[in-house]
Length: 230
Image (cartoon, rainbow, N blue to C red; front, top):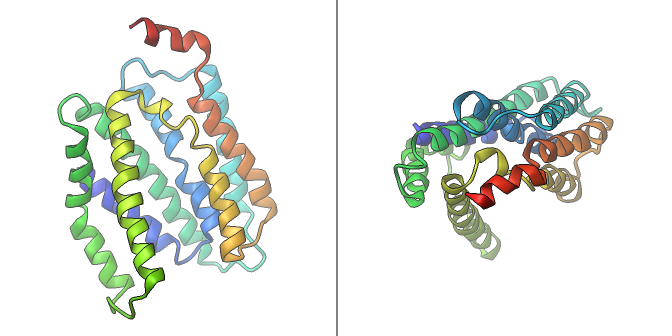
């Protein structure tokens, strides 16, 4: 199940990036913390929605609507397809986190959870690679090798392993305490490196979504004291 969810999530990301900007995509994908916050309220014990979380959800919803409805001047009609696929990716990411916490966190080692996702997502990702990259090897140089090392070792191994280990140890709605920075980095890098347009929708949606993520995952002093006592 986790391999299926993981593979479908990245399928949505890869296909979605064919139609929409990376700056918009990173905002939509980071719907994940809000999916986790809502799902944890209904499916996980001791992880309830609070007034501050609800405020964060409202702010993020307004931000997402702003980004979704206001597109760049150069946008093609197919950008809608890419936006929807990125939203689906965010939902699948949140669903994966909830599934791991609900059914696997106390039963299997984090490395098993990590390997389940990578191994069982291979068939899905292999099919995607055949569609998107029919010619496997075009050339090999230092830039390509460095990129492959970064994506394979740093991103696909180290960062995911640390993430899944944290899922086994902490409340899932607390793990994204600083992920409000990720949409910011994504938008900035999209503008700097990909020359994407910094639209009014991004100006409105980015701070709202980032602030919403912060509120959804923030814990006050009273919420932390029981954890230290336990």
